[in-house]
Amino acid sequence: MNAGRYPGFRVALSIASFLCAIPRATSAATDAKTEWERTLEAAKKEAQLVLYASDDYGKIFAQFQKRYPEIKVVHFAGHGGSSTQRMLSERRAGKYFVDLYLSGASTAYNVLYRSKFLDPIKPILLLPEVTDQSKWWRGKHVYVDNEGEYLFSFNGAIQPFFAYHTKTVNPSEFRSYWDLLNPKWKGKMVILDPTGDPGGTTAALKLVYYNPELGPEFLRRLLTEMDVTPSRDGTQITNWLAVGRYSISIFAHVARMGMDVGKKQGLPVDWFGPEAFKEGVPLSSANGNVALINRAPHPNAARVAINWLLSREGQTTFQSVIEGTDSFRVDVPKNDVASYARRVEGERYLLTERPEWMDIRPILKFINEVWKK
Image 1: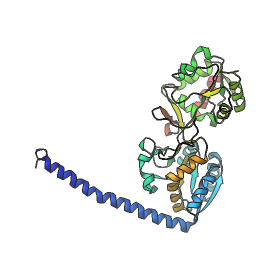
Image 2: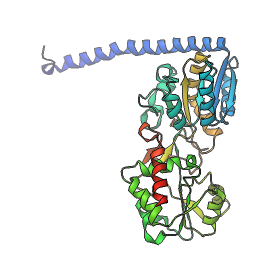
Image 3: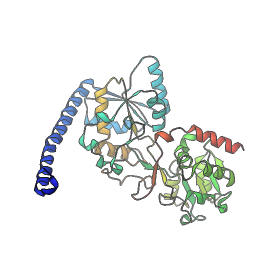
Image 4: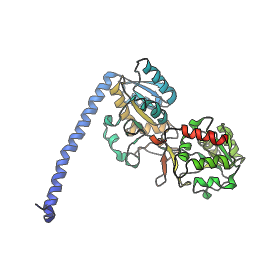
């Protein structure tokens, strides 16, 4: 039968297809609910959850402990480097203590993911409010790894690395990072020295080096033509900017340098917002990443923990505890997000935690070669 000649038949066919889909959707929801209940009961029997995580996750998972009192949370606090080194040492000794890693993406990717220490997260997401990607920024989950399954990023905060002295700089003059190369700013910029503590400048370096609209050429000219003054002291950079010794600071995160506090106190400092540069501003997950460790001693507790963390309650807790974060969940209230970190719809953002941008070594090698010359 030619359905095109019988409109009524097409309508009936569409209705029939829709009705057939309802049982499948209902069955899938029922299966997920059953699996969640089974996992939760098994987690309660395991009775423990072990985290290798940044310091603030102790406060975050105190809320998890209240929600699931049968599961005792054991938190080994430390930054990504110390946590992964601990895990490497344990594995060499044949010991498996940890369930979840919660910290920076670069270390997790370069050590845990590449060493194949992780189980996929995607199959163990069970709560409908977590799997519903319409609840997330731009309608999708963000993973750092190549397969899009192992390293989940739930924080997407703006990273403001370019600030200025308000009495000598008119921000409306800037539409591109290339405007920083205007000869009028030669000798008037201070830079957080990336050769001292590259971790503090990583997101900014990735933004300019790997961005095809900027790249090594922009970075080379910035470092060699503009007579920038390097400093490894964040307080010094803020003070120099506040008194007008320098007009612009680069690669120095405004919150880590205390500029946000200084601005509140009335100092003549401010930073370029996401509208300032057409090439975009860096969006970083910082410590807002979770990885599920394979051969975990409490796998069901780990699954419950991940689902809770990525729920609205978990993300609201995360965002309220760690300053300068902006959850990728869009249904989480944003009134407690710091103004410098809050995403604004309609602006261009570049995620700095992505597989092809993970290796910082070519950038540091390039900087060392350029500055030596």
